[in-house]
Image (tube, rainbow, N blue to C red; front, side, top):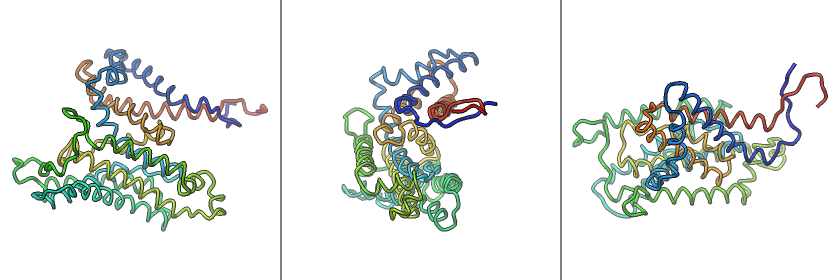
Length: 354
């Protein structure tokens, strides 16, 4: 009988190459699937994965899409390294945008450089507050943060719908469910004139460098790794698992909230019911595609951003349905997990010596 056997020493080379193999398999299978469905599979895959990189006018779009994915994935990766599984970053992203927008509405009519930093602080606090509930339940009652963080996502979306359709509705918005447009002091400045590249994009890169330094060069980062890899050794070393749980969930919630505020103060310029974009879920794929390494996450964010930009292109050129983007993202995650399993395990016959 066939069985899975753990390899004594997984290949370091294959661990590094498996994300590229997963991307290649995703492109191949996606092409076959869409061809079988009657679409031009080759051109669909080309437009989704290659066209955004080959056409320079699409590069700003890649940056705009990649920035929130990278920021959210960085926070998730810190928690994943400690075996703290925050699956509700989408809700923290939404609540961060809500909290930051609350600051914007409270300062509407005012001016000053301090408004945007105050909104950013509000976004961070909003995301952290939403992540604090799963942290409290995990530490005090041993409730799985996977379930609580995920369920709170749907609560956050309903809070958004209530606000934009009720107390926060723009009185001059022709009854559309949306807030007031942000003022110039409440929006992210454009860093490249006549483009969509706003300040949030370079800040995402700065945050990635800070996250790398934190994880690789500090005692806190070492504590996160030890708690995740060897909880018993962490206890003997004086590292408190509950403290790490709180710290990682608050960090991931804060970064997701900041990403939400940047999205509201950047591409959207207000809050609308369309604000939940699924970035919090897609960022999980980005984190694993980047091997939970901040530098790898930057490249993973760019790849997943290409699926958004390329998906929009393919809707026009190949007439793919909008759901095709989600299918490619799900297929990429599946292929990444499958290649990881084959790198770490091998198939053998039961009864034979390894």
